Length: 423
Image (cartoon, rainbow, N blue to C red):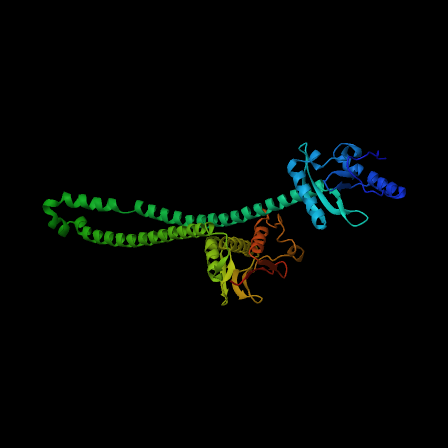
């Protein structure tokens, strides 16, 4: 039991009955939470054993002392100001979370309730409170919050990686065309019949003294004009062919510049929502995937209804649409249909909303996977990482949007709908 001690300050004139004192002492001895009573100078009048144990002292050792003996100066000053406000207003402070800093350098988290302490006449003579140590719970919560932030950041980076991967894939596809054109040009130059012209020139020079007779009467000489005509025709045809390859090469280079330039414009776009044209967003995302769609022989169908501008962030929308189009391309490729099709659709949604839809006629999604398709780490592809759709959903939510999926089942294709607010 607690050892009574005479406090160095005045107590109420009329002590409580013996039974009341016994009950209070029993309560303070055994209550697991930290309980304290203070006078108007914020000095402890009584404390629970659990409170004293927290400070590694006996309850009697705390009587007459203040928070300054046990907490950091900043924490003690804040507690003192808090108690003065409670005594001045009579308004309690209930269930408040505090970051507790002890005088010995320890830190923790405490859930605190403080109330005014009144005497028999109702006059406020101090404060009393009940505290619960929630350090373990709060630490876990903070760790979970940090893990959630890390997860969102990882998902955002994964989404950016998806966009970058899309850029690299498409640049790679175009570079294949560039390489083909370069090889054709190189082969054409190597096969040019320059040596034939040189031989004709040598032949004509060797007959410079009798050139007219040689061309008119010599059997080989009579073939020279016809050969020169044939050679000229060949060079004209070769010139036209190489010009076509040069035009194709220039077109491919322009395509690469367009892809890189578009990515740069989206990458440097600010993070603020703005009014955006849904059709332009769809076309930009499609251009970033054009090479991959062509390489896998996937036909793209546009079904754009008239819709108003949406309020969104350019980079986030591009991230989402590139993910959806790439996934639709893979699904169509693996679906086994004679004609592989990805459909891009724009349609009005609920009032004040617009739907950007990416559908495919591919492998479809089993019903058991529809609820898991956006889960972090979930993927059905052997080389997938499960970040793309999860990061897309997070990006949609960040823009007050929604991302949903529908599929009638395996072999029935899938439809992903990005719902965004009207600007």
